[in-house]
Amino acid sequence: MLRTHTCGELRLSDASTTVTLSGWVQTIRDKGGVLWIDLRDRYGITQLILEEGVTAADLFATARTLGREFVLQATGQVVERKSKNPNILTGDVEVRVSALTVLNPAKLPPFLIEDETDGGDDLRMKYRYLDLRRNPVRQNLELRHRMAQQTRLYMDGQQFIEVETPVLIKSTPEGARDFVVPSRMNPGEFYALPQSPQTFKQLLMVSGFDRYYQIVKCFRDEDLRADRQPEFTQIDCEMSFVEQEDILQMFEGLVRHLFKTVKGIDLASVPRMTYADAMRLYGSDKPDTRFGMEFTELKAVRGSGTVDTVDLTSGKGFGVFDSAEIVVGINAPGCASYTRKQLDELTEWIKRPQIGAKGLIYVRYNEDGSLKSSVDKFYTESELKAWADRFGAKPGDLMLLISGDAAKARKQLNELRLEMGTRLGLRDPNVFSTLWVLDFPLLEYGEEEERWFAMHHPFTSPKPEDIPLLETDPGAVRANAYDLVINGTEVGGGSIRIFNRDLQARMFSLLGFSDEEAKAQFGFLMDAFEFGAPPHGGIAFGFDRLCSLFGGADSIRDFIAFPKNNSGRDVMIDSPSTIADKQLDELKIRTVV
Ligand code: ASP
Image 1 (tube, rainbow, N blue to C red):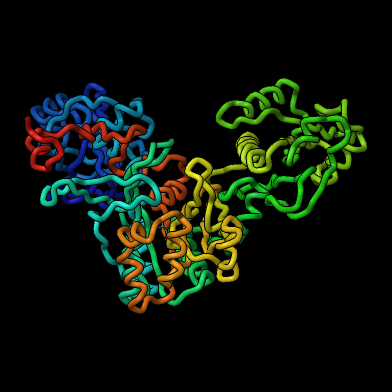
Image 2: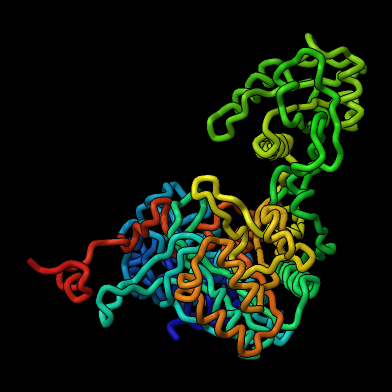
């Protein structure tokens, strides 16, 4: 070894021993007669000291030629420091250098290798290997490592077997767009990279593996919205002979284990909510439950996601509400003092094209008990009071209302709720609120394509009691599907699967597959169902996202060693790139003229 100790290891108890350290120059402080070098490696920083008159003259001269990020090997005696640094673990000591080797000089790095860097995103990504030297980025990857290790520990303890599934598989039309790989040996034919190991893990259940998991790369060729990566990692799991309840408990166990071992947090049991309630109360299937501010309906008709018919707004001459399918709002506690300017700004915010609300109605419940709204022309104070009562509002609160088509209004109000949560400081990244969302619809209708799509995927089983509805009212069929939501982010999702050939075939036909298409694309799975497929189900967690949540960060990028940018490019290796004509010819992708 080129060192006896790491740069994070030496303590006062090591004083007077001779040690050799290797690492990178973090900083050099040249005080004329004394020169200090902070030497850094993954484990920490140790201060080296050279003193004119004490240190050999040639050594002192060499030290003066060093620069940031030079790779050094330094030997010397550990001594107690005069002025100690309580901020670092090695802060009591320094190493009095007696020999110094420059293992490799370094060019001046293009940005500061410090916790707070002056490097912009592009520069950091181009020199990602330097960015990774920075503590915060390295710590994220250390967290990721611990998460993976603890996942393996838990899964192994529960008898799950880690099985690798292939990366070169077959393209299928359902789901997102596939990345494809041309096959040289089969000209004109392509592999696809897996969007998930879904069919393989189901086949492993048919094989009798009983409990499978894998920490696995998945690939989806989607337009990159903020913070999506074309390749990402899942904790992918499947179990046999289980019902939904078994899966929920097993994986609640995993999440609790991770919180406990990685963050030292004892997680309370994960609350559950149906999809219908989530949509009605939060306008989202992944509500952020760190704060309340649930929706209150002032006008709604039973059905369309509403439980009780109510109408506290119609017939008073306000056409906007009269013609609306729904009038729904949130109560922002303590916000009655919002100025006109603040309310106008909020209205403009919600009218932006990204959200697209037509307007925002407000009702101030003043501290003195009076009520003042933007629709005072149409509603008396006692009518406003009836609204406030329904909201459970208190003096000092501000009610914000949206109206229109139910689905759209709920979606817009969801955005407003989240925004208000942020503005009111209710979304602390170090507070964790978990939720199981259950009973998702099996299907959703694609207006453009004029057909049904599987909301989760085509292998998800309908609730047995809803199967008859498949023929009469497919949109009302609920699935045995569940999502795990943490702080408003979907971190995992799965379902109990279909394991019967006929039901699977019916499902494909509902999704618009002809028998031939279903057979060509998923015949292998349907065939397998005829050879003794056990009842089974599973779940997959977005591992990158889980890591970023545990790290209290918004972006998954800093939890991936070498991520791609928003255009799907790796700017460090400059990929994707063109390939040589010879390669194209071999692949028969382009014929030579
Ligand atoms: N394969 C699914 C997904 O990637 C997860 C599952 O159903 O287990 O979302």
